[in-house]
View (tube, rainbow, N blue to C red):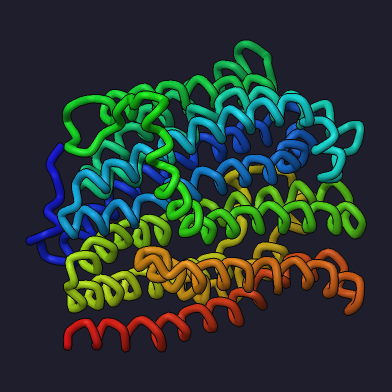
Length: 454
């Protein structure tokens, strides 16, 4: 794999060379869960019910992603900054600390989840009918937690060393495997929902094998080293820094999990299980359409961190500008497509005509003002990449916990908007939260970069 030169390469070229493999990787990583939903939604006679039931597992899956992001996205900017400063040994210790945090947390989640899966699903609103699908899916899915967390959590460190193609390849292997195994287990072996989960775990296992080959091998200059137990305590200070910076993406995922629980609960009251299925589809469409934006901002992140550590403010500004020039037009085009052809997106997951009639207005509402989402992601990325922990954490909480969750209850109950109120909470929070985050970033970061030049 050819290494990206963060030190001397052109900023736009470096972002493109980092973001493109990440885009491919993220698009394919969606196949782990999206393909499951596509096939599950088409199980004869039970697809719509099964799809809604699997949607009830989302809060746990989102929480796993939250912990993964805490250590991966929390550690990789610190790692990239130290590379920019030439502190190779410190950078490697940060990477090793993140790896150990990922492994320990994955083992705890697997044990806790297997024991408490059923009561958790009850809290999330699972009925007796839905429990038959959701419980078996979740328990099998949790068995692959270690695989998914190590693969996703360590890829940012590989990217930060200039090898985004490795991360892309690891996801390609898993995604293609999942694409092949899903219909095999679901339809050929007649395993249904449990077959989808088994296929996902096997695919995640194949991905982690490739990542492990690189992070333990000699291809990377900074890699995972097995330390004596007596030396592990030397990593504790790095763990604190990683977790404190990683709190922002962790909180974002936790609040996403809480939002999902709140949405499912309110929708069960105002629309029943079919609206939980609709929310599953809308959330899945959101995952697909967010992927290019996430690839761009995560592709820009190590470049922003590296140049900030190397005290090159001009390069930091250029990276920020290029990131926005890519994100804003894309989100505008997506919004137009949603207004014009909503059925195109919904039909990916279901051919149920009854569901389609209610899903179209829900999708229109949910994606209204989607362009403001690019402001939220860009602002959050800059704060995280520059180790601005307080701002990153605040805006993670502000949009979801302070706005979306309360509005999810206020719009349907207080303002009488019913199920539509659940879908309306998202665009309102996008406008207010996205504008606030981006404006604050401009007013605080640009002056700092100007002072750095002087």
